Image 1: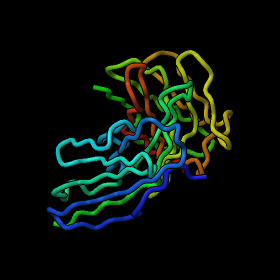
Image 2: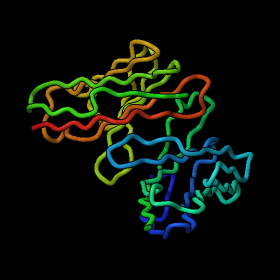
Image 3: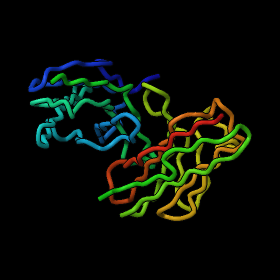
Image 4: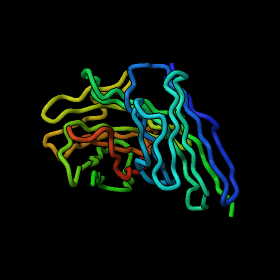
Length: 115
Length: 115
């Protein structure tokens, strides 16, 4: 059972455009939602994260929108640049109750930003 | 902050040999470390979780006798692939979490090729 569903699988955006990646989760016990960026041959790097008591978080060109009632969250990349071309993973974990803090990952979105 | 290193970055070995991969948290104490395996164009697959000084907890289907994990200190975990075979060739990534951190921080990964 996939607990975090991510879409689209791949995305092509023109330079300067907005990239939007969506995720939906099932487990209401999740209380922390990070996004990771991974370049080929590298480990994932934490990009931005949000808690469910906040509906939006912005860091530079990256924004997470969170809809608790719909159990959905999304990553928006404003003014997308060719250097943003990477695979993006949404994830969710439970930071309490002895969960051992395992991350549940989406399947990833390959973003290509054309110059 | 929250930097995780891995060594080696690449290793090529002959079938039947054992390979050790090190994962270190450089600027925090990692109370929990995780080992993942990633196949091309796929998401991360959790292999095992380890807490410092305790035996690792392996995910279903992961052979604990083949993938030996040691988390002897708060800054070091090792993964040993014993009697490696070509099907063990993959990208292995570790991550670490400290008690004051909300989520996992990943190492740069190790590309294992078994000939």
